Image (cartoon, rainbow, N blue to C red; front, side, top):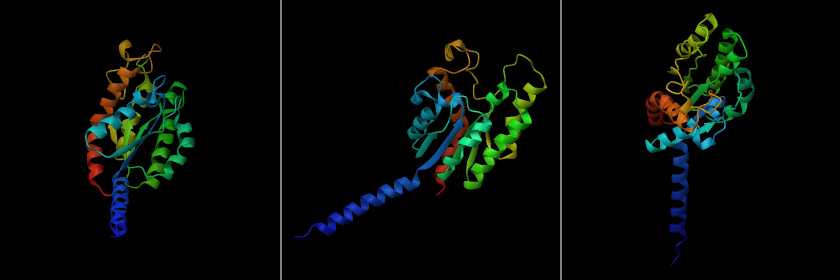
Amino acid sequence: MNYRPALLVTTLSLVLAQLASTAEMKTILVFGDSLSDGFMLKRSEAYPALLAKKLHAAGLNFQVTNASAAGGTTEGGMERLPPHLKRKIDIFILELGINDAFRGLSVEQIQHNLQEIIDKVKARNPNVRVVIAAMQLPNYAADDYVSAFGKMFGDLASRNNAALVPYLLQGVAGDPSLNLPDGIHPNAAGQKILAENIWRVLEPIAREVSRQSH
């Protein structure tokens, strides 16, 4: 008796099942600086990896790519972006700008650069959902620059029909127990709170995107 046809059908079924699984998988690109990169921590302790676990636990089939770089600026982000545009992006989480502010770049230029990054992602992925993680400058001087910087993220979200994480470091900033000794970067416990801050905004979007066909 010849079992080859049956074996061939079984093998073909497995291959098709794998292809279907791959086709159903959605992608999330996290594009940020040291806060997203997990400065001084293992990549597995940074919030993008924690989001991947939350998505999996929720039964949502997403691949999360952490394309963040410590010290990242908006200008550096524009330079780093092109290789990541070669693959489809379903959800784009953008967390950049604070290092530009520390360097004294004008809020107008920071916003221009962030808009250009968003435009390039949308040009290649017309249906991409954008999530903007907002930052705030330390309130040592509530001057016009500090105010304009804080307002910029909301303006970007409105202009691009993007979801907004009101303040990425909510519940973490200023708490020594949740930050590294430098007082700036979250430790592993702090990163868990960052993940929660983003998850509140990301979860409904991820569920909606997961229902859409590729």
